[in-house]
Length: 259
Image 1 (spheres, rainbow, N blue to C red):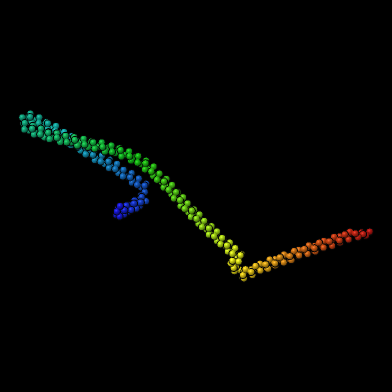
Image 2 (tube, rainbow, N blue to C red):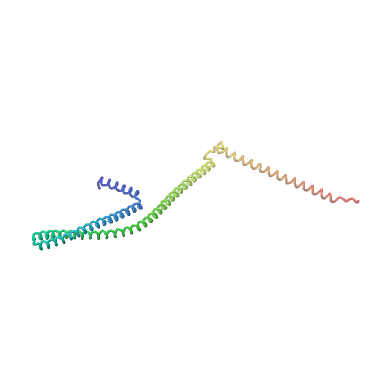
């Protein structure tokens, strides 16, 4: 295929796609029906014209038949008057009229055939228009239904694409969070083993270890102090309770004075 032929094919394809997008099937159906109805009106107008022409020919035939009959009478009258020359002239006119009459009859027969053909075409076209009207409404309903289904499918497809995009965004976010968490854990492990220095705890790893031991020792001392205070408090409470019991026993052992 030559370059020009390919270029024509490409432009033809693009033009066809553009026309397909611009064409409204419902409007095309209405336009087709309008054209059929216009053709039906044209057939009806042609029927009127042909019928008018036939009536004119019928009038001419009647006039010609009357003229032929008159020529026949003139020939008889001329023979009765012993005027053979006039009789011949009348018969010649009669012959010419007969020829014209044969031509008129042939034309009338042709018009009759045309009328019959037009009537048949009119009936056929009227029937097709009735069928097309019903089919047109059916096609319109199917077109509306198909367009609605297409819109739903397109909307569903759009929603599916949106959901897919959301899913991908969630996956990317989760992956990024997981990578960040892993990085934080790795940094904590490195800091714990001393591979990385902690800016919040100055000094080297030995200093940090000694600080940790000091903190643990201080915590143990503080815990021992609290335990000692708690034990002393319990002993004091027991001593006070014992003294109160002795006082009660002493009070009960004293004699009661007589009145």
